[in-house]
Length: 231
Image (cartoon, rainbow, N blue to C red; front, side, top):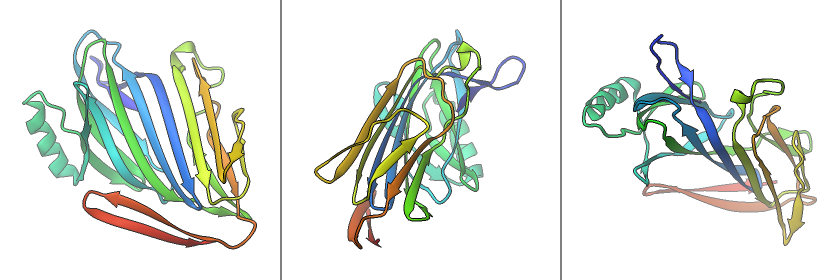
């Protein structure tokens, strides 16, 4: 969520124009990229607090925000240092893009400036090893249940795109998603306008029919990592 302060000092959540989720799965490794566009309904430039919670065991790999048409990459820093740097940069009328760890799986960053009657685009990416549930692996993208809420709680456009390989059969629950399998890759694309979420998107990946192993690579800055998985 992205909230801004008001005259009453009670934070108010900005409306969400769009949420686009892209998930890539290789065996048990899932990479999720979430791109959100928030709208500032107020008549003045403001600053806000962007907070999010990662799934259990997930690691953040990227946080970026749109600044004058270019994506500025975020940096994870200790909370007190983040506060001092943020205050210094805000005085220079620039967007600091500093990420604070709040404990557990919770993170927070201050966003400034958010233009009057304008939009702010935020991109978040994280990776996780999918937990085993019996003879399958489980994935969930958290969404609230807003069925029956007012129109103001609508999310604008929502899209969810999946690409999965090195897994068994894939099934989706919670939303009408058709899984298409071709050339060893399972995929789906779900798009909704004036979206009213009714709980999380849940995916179930069957274990391969025979024991398999694969190597997955990732890179963060100058560092490179690989995962060797036997299933």
